[in-house]
Length: 419
Image (cartoon, rainbow, N blue to C red; front, side):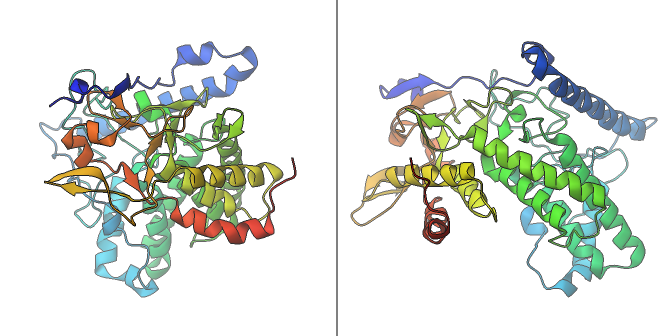
């Protein structure tokens, strides 16, 4: 049954706006230049990336199929003993990572790295097109042959950089240099991808649609910002990077902190939480996939708060943001309920003693839970959306627990400012 048949529908999820020259031209004159330069940089890099692949394929009657998709992080472990990174399995991963780096310096997502290296003429990324997309779907690629060619979604690019940095000290000199050079290119790629306001899009060069939004989803902005902090301090095996990259990374990290402060949503005059995506220009919450509304997100907000609490000398603005965000998270959980399978379909049911449990999304005005469906309908009860979406998405969870547990010790050092 289509979710649109349910009486509990409370709205329709609108599409996100891409970052375009027309939107930049509508900005106040004083704000246009950095955004126009950013768009030009993105356009030029996309053209260069595509030209590089076309040059490889010139004269070829056919070319290899795209690489195999799958879970990528498991193939790039970051917690092995140091000596493992010089082993044959690790070298296989290194060869794959080096070969699939895009001309821009990034990597695609959902691509196991313990496979064969890239072949001449092969696409840079696996097929990441949405197999369930229908006409008008927000996730339909503008060009199905060119999607996620460089991304930070699902920890892509970040993980490749970190793996190369771990591997380099355990490898012969020539291969170690290749790893360090590729890691540096990856960091420079992330620096080039950062928006003028300090955020990062999901895909760069820009791909259009919701991919152009400031992406907190899957903790992308936070994890890139953390990487920038490690780069600036020469931590996580990244001390080999040149001074200009470290300085640029320090500035990028600070801009990301300011971006998080700017995107924390005010509800009825008070600071609350963050959305999964924020519009690149307005910073307002925006939608992503058909079932992901412009709403506050408990999981991504908790991760943003953990990041802000990690800042060694937090400004009064950071302190205020953390206290406000934690206070909001404390207001939202339900108790005595569980999100479990009933007759093969997940439902929110009464279960004495269960909880606390947070919804994935909350309306930015009412702070009530909201749930989207694949047909773009918005609901106020998870049990009213289609079984496919209830089973296929994490609508309820315990994401804020870690941030809440860490808050008490943090708050003892950084008391809430007086009104």
